[in-house]
Image (cartoon, rainbow, N blue to C red):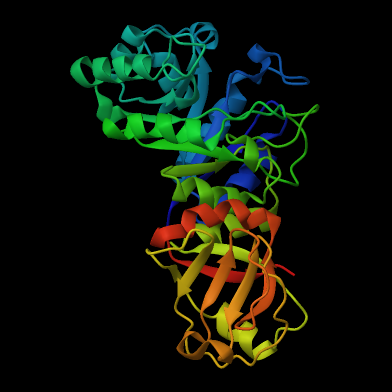
Length: 375
């Protein structure tokens, strides 16, 4: 099962509510937990400073359930807790075993922290490129940070996780995230990111929607955003919102157990139940020799298909070759441009807008995929 996680915020919820949420996630197979200690420090509305007992109870529950908790930290909260770069004992006393460095630490301080005597793991803020480059986008600075870490620190004690962005329009592009992730991977450091719940309360985004890393994922079902992150090289993915819905958690867990990308299709009413059953039961792989304007899938030739609804093949329509195409009968195709009518193709449905970004992940034989009925 792929590494997936949830986020919990004691600023807004009781220990009992958080405990129930953690147990539900653990039962489904989730392994990670993100906890922020800096919401009040950053000025999030209605956030508070929970007392130490609340933090200890949350971390104790994580230990009890064998969930890896990563605690968001900046330099100001770090000092308020009584920590220094030479002394992480206050974190140990709270039960913290991993801290995510949000901001405020120099490269040299990061390197020193990786070798702490308490065995506390570090998670770097991947979205800022390097700890002391607040402007971001400085790939050279990131490489300099990682080279220092590799030479003088303990890189085996480090992961990286991107930010989440509650305000619409502020999330990262996938191209930027991939470029950053590639550099971390050169140094053997795993990278994670966040996806948004569509049903969570708006604790962290009263003026926005969803707690996600990639802007284009803001309104997507979390399991579909998660599938793209994994297909794009992220090693772990967390639901960023306070309380994702039960169905969302179940779908994330189900998809994390498979290495097959699910493509949601709205079938047209002209499609027979027999053809739908055949196509929905199969696993496909797109052809490596993909033409410019469509995706051709191996895995369904030979299905009996009588000509029906040979309509225009508009962008994102799904078609299957009919008996007029001879030995190509049954081949599944997805139009990436408007292709017009063909008497050899039955148009059977349309890729749902939620799943269109996933098409890039399955082209040229990159990943196995299957169709799911989203009608």
